[in-house]
Amino acid sequence: QLQLQESGPGLVKPSETLALTCTVSGGSISGSYYYWGWIRLSPGKGLEWIGSVYYSGTTYYNPFLKSRLTISVDTSKNQFSLRLTSVTSADTAVYYCVRPQNNYDNTGNSGFAYWGQGALVTVSS
Amino acid sequence: QSALTQPPSASGSPGQSVTISCTGTNSDVGFYRLVSWYQRHPDKAPKLIIYEVTKRPSGVPDRFSGSKSGNTAYLTVSGLQAEDDADYYCSSYADSHVIFGGGTKVTVL
Image (cartoon, rainbow over all chains, first blue to last red; front, side, top):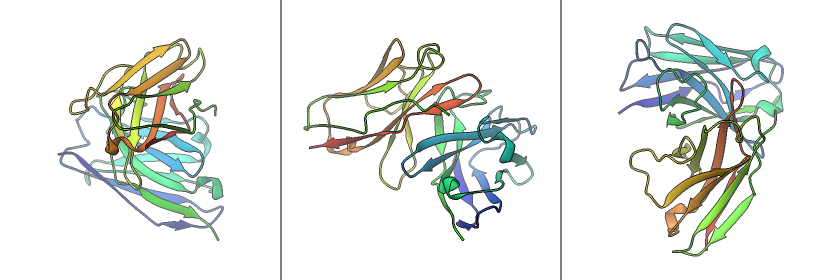
């Protein structure tokens, strides 16, 4: 059974960098032909797709976040990570790591079948 | 970014049906048959219940059905049960990324 688990600080100061890691168990990131991604749920804003990464390191980003965003992968640890710079209160959200239903799906247009439990990140001084 | 438009709430009694709309544009919902629906219970991760407008993942009851007309997609929950009380979100592919609706709170009366 594939499982995803987010980890990282729950509190980040404004203008600093938000960093989260997703650890995958029950399956391998490398050679699985799936993209691995991040979605966030903000109070009053609903869900927002952040971006995705392939085991090779190829990335796809939400164009509205692209300038502040880096998603990377560490296949040796079966993990992928999110870095979002210059955060503001608008970045306060529950951050989920996700995997689409279909392989080669870089944006989740086939639907996100696997989700982590979510990590609440609050941006506040 | 433009989100898809969903009604904030909907309700129905047990056994009844409820239909939720998800309105986009001819650049997303209207152009692609790549609409998904998710169910989310409080403090839980969303669960995929419909993909590619009408398809159900394995294990999702056939009480859940999806459709689309023009720029609007619909999720219908038939034979409402207490466990259907949850938030529902739609999503659509839109020119290199996926966008979501703001969510609809379904209350089972």
